[in-house]
Amino acid sequence: MLTRHIAITAVTVLAMLSVPVISHAEGDPEGGGGIECGLYDCEVEVDVPGQDGDQTGGSGGTDGTGGSGSSNGGDPTDKSVCVYKLADPQPPAGSLDWQGHKPGDGAVYEQTCGWGGVDGDVIVRMVWLADPPPQETVDPAVLAQRAVDSMTLLGPDIASPHAAGKYTVGVPMWMWVNQSATTYGPNTASASAGGITVTATAKVSKIVWKMGDGASVTCNGPGTPYMASEGMAESPTCGHMYSKTSARAQNGKFPVTATSTWTINWQGGGQAGQLTEVRQTNVQLAVGEVQVVS
Image (cartoon, rainbow, N blue to C red):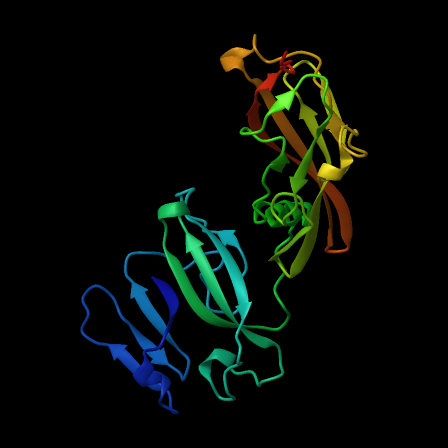
């Protein structure tokens, strides 16, 4: 006969009691057993007839050691995976959760075990462990990418040139972008798992402009806003001059793309590294010729 032990959280009424409550099943033709409840949890014992008592589950026992493993049965999906969380606060002295130990001798953890894959059962119980359970192994680089994914990095917020602007062949064009956390940076975010926290900071390192006339311009900054006092001067940081009109382009406009490269530096978990993200913004520009009035 196989005896199965399952620990469940006691209802609020039992949680308010200071003495153990013991309940035994009687006259059950399908099997015997009982329920023993402490201040924080109940332990259910069921005797299942017709099964040998030498079958053991990897984490279904009541010795408090928990862990991960699989049953020795014939079902290959009957596997258990357990995770642990330190009980905070710890149960008071005398609680069944201590399994005969005293506070300070090891600790009590909330154990969550799942069986049988996605559609399997999940059991949550309190267990005593002499030593802390192994922590989840997390790759800091994975956490860094998770932090980046939470930033909502966008393409350049183009201030100039813009679709409604009037641009002329042979006249210097000044290009620049508006700066914000999501369109230029810096943008900082963190991600944590398995006791590790990784912090990443992203900032645009360059913007590559494809002007639609075959030219490409790389700018290592946001560009310089144009002032009327500059007259016909060229931009000192990011500019272009068209040598032909957009009359023969599709819809009579040049398709301009501004592609930003985000450089992300991260550190955490005793490691550091760098990631790169690319974002793009598109705009259509009409470029004409100077009209001479006679």
